[in-house]
Amino acid sequence: MAELLLALDVKGREEAARVALACEGELDAIKIGYPLVLSTGLGIVKELAKANIPIIADFKVADIPNTNALICEEVFAAGCSGIITHAFCGSDSLLAIVDGAHDHGGSAFVVCEMSHPGALDFLSGANAERMAKMAKESGADGIIAPATRPDRTAVLRSVIGGSMKIYSPGVGAQGAQPEDVKKYVDGIIVGRAIYESADPGKAAHEFRVRAL
Ligand code: NUP
Image 1 (spheres, helix red, strand yellow):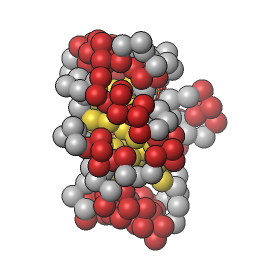
Image 2 (cartoon, rainbow, N blue to C red):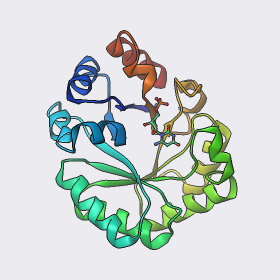
Image 3 (tube, rainbow, N blue to C red):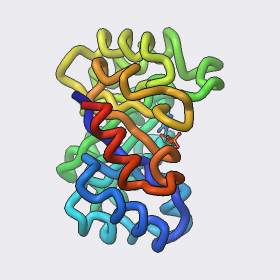
Image 4 (cartoon, rainbow, N blue to C red):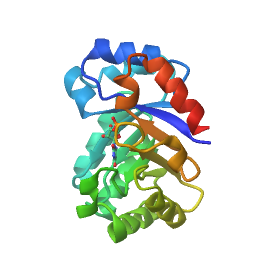
């Protein structure tokens, strides 16, 4: 049984509020990222969080430890409950995010293998497994692994074991189905297939049921 996370990559407050309201009751978390935050500002987090739903900031942080720690301060002060970071900057950068999240009572999720075809250039294979191992050693709460490559997500699950979460993007617009990965993951991440739907609430409901 996997949770449903909405990737709310829409532009502007009104559109964000429209989709979030339509999906009320169907979601376990809302994942926000650059498209929404650059178009509205981080204040959008407090507006979305009024619906009493966790907000995860998908900023795929990739910087030196000090900058990563400063980013964490802003993300959690804004009201987010989780942050998504890259791991390829190394263990010290990763630790700054994990510690920064935990110091603020939040969670840190680590991108290990990405879902798009170009991930095969760098962000997959042995590199992904090394990053998953590093994520576990860092004390991170979970990893991001691709629904588009369920066999790889199964491998990454075996690297991290059962105590960390896996959230998995790639369902819907990128071609994967909830049934492909739900047995390996704790949550599926769905964006366009919900927010571009004529009826986002109905689409979210259907994904939620299929992820059970
Ligand atoms: O590997 C990743 N793939 C991916 O699609 C890591 C991610 N964080 N994402 C994000 O998941 C992506 O940035 C988008 O917010 C969401 C997928 O959206 P969609 O393809 O369902 O529209």
